[in-house]
Image (cartoon, rainbow, N blue to C red; front, top):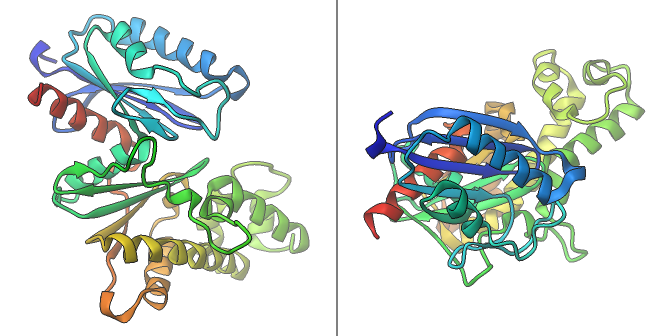
Length: 310
């Protein structure tokens, strides 16, 4: 890895941590992964990252770094606004922390914004508009227009997970996040334990959604019904994004997107019914091409932008 090509991307999610080094085109050449220890809060995460930066990346000359954070940030100031997942982040100067530990210019972005940037380039359509939603421990959103991340006034971003699905305040995140789908599966399997899905999860608590694909492959009607319910909620939420932004494509990432084509097809089938006729045909609905690399690849690209615009 040449000293003139080293950029760093740091991902801080609700369950996953990543640090990557690579070039400014999103190509990853070195990687470290870690798991969030929620009980240790922000301090524990920072300790893990600092140790990894020192031991795994300490010999590199870093040109610029980008930190992708799983929650609202003030990207202009490099400051965390709040975390909906982990205690101890509110108001933290994350950009300054990263600069002190890398010796390079560092910027802070919402992780879904970075994923949107990475996926726009992966699709060969950086001009967009591309709307991205992440369905993991939470639900996020990002928008890329003309190769640039769309920003609202700080700390506002495309907080798709907090879009309301009804007047009672039910949000997309409460219905479509990984933990919400896990809870739905557990509840339904308690009533129907003698189904392929019920037998697959057994007494498991947590991560039940990963069994949906196997249950669908066995023709499980319960699994199919749950996927259709999630797709209905997602399509209704995404219809608001279509009416506001009318993106060329919608990309779904995060753990739940690993279900793949059954989910994207179900969302694509329902979306037109929620969108006004003048906006049809609706945007193409796709599964993220980069998988778990969406955020770090976008981070490397943004780090390169920082250098070229300094």
